[in-house]
Length: 204
Image (cartoon, rainbow, N blue to C red; front, side, top):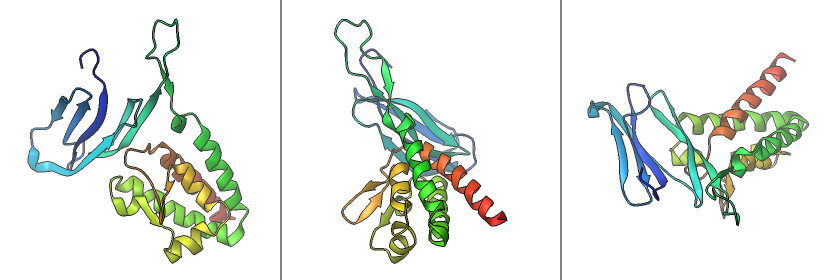
């Protein structure tokens, strides 16, 4: 990467035989792309792609067992007059722990909501597992608010919608949707938290 170029996107192909992935390209602000590709193209899986939000730099690319699991980014700090390094990054809000506090608060509400809360947590566990299992599958990242199961078992529970928003889902006109390229770190943490609570309740 030359001076003045920044990474603005990531795309590639998963691998059907494990490792990191079959192929990955770093898309640059200049229009160039740096591509790393395996030799056995017949083992490549489905395509993936993620764009960086404006004013962000790439921090981490999550690859596991041949599959792309999202990216993490850093918010570029604004220039400060008189400083020698205006490009020093500041951690974006998705990584600063605010989402974790929201997850914990929402989870406490769900735990206090009795049987309805337990049912909501079981559905949340399934939603999280689906997204982490196939991160780029649109049907797992979009939850229609008029879906009776989503409405009755999740959104009507105390803390259900708050939990989804803490995961990174965004309110649309008719759905809650997790944007492509959103960090999967909150979902990974949420899976651990839900597993712990549901296991404790099963043993109680």
